Amino acid sequence: MGAFAKKVRYSGPLKESLREECRLRDINFHIPERNVATRWNSTVIMMNSIASLRDAADNLCDHQPALRQYKLTDEEWTIVGQLQPILNGFLDATNIISESNKCLVSEIIPLIDNLHAWLVEVADAETLHKTVRHAAQRGIAVMDKYYSLTDESNVARFALRKLVLFLYVCMQY
Image (cartoon, rainbow, N blue to C red):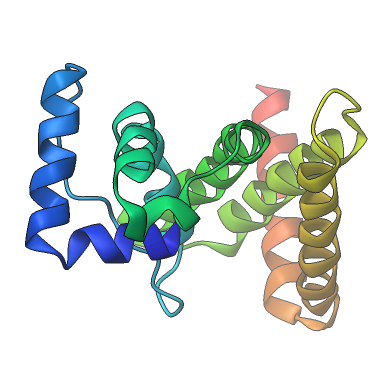
C-alpha cells in the first residue's frame, strides 16, 4: 500500500489515471495518503485513504504495468479491513489525547487499559485472520512493556489513587 500511495502521489500521469478510475466508478477522488515512519498513526491514515479507493486502485493496478506489483490480493484486503478498526482505535485515542488542553495521567491510564482489553479481545477472536490476531498479540506485548513502567512512577500511582478516591466520594452522594 505504501509504495502504491507514494507512486500515485508523486506521479502526475498516475494521479490523473486514478482520478479517471474514480470518476468511472463514482468514487470521490483524493490523493492517497502515504505512510511516514516518523509520524504517529500515518499507517492507518494511509490504509483508510487507499481502502476508500479500493476499486479504482485495483483497476489502476490491473491496467498500469508499473503498478501491477502493488495490487493487493483479496486476502490482503481482508487483512487491511480487519486491521483498520483496531488501528483506528489508536488513532482515536491519539486524537483525544492531542485535543485535550491538559493531559492527565488519571485519564490516560484508563484509556490505555481500554485499548489493552480491546487488543486481548482481538487476539482471542478466532474469526479474524491469524495475521491480525498476531498483530494484536504483538501490540499487547508492547503495551505491557510500557505499562509496566508506570509501576515505577509515583505520578501514575498517585493519579490512580486520586481517581479511585474521587469515584468513591461520587458514589457516596
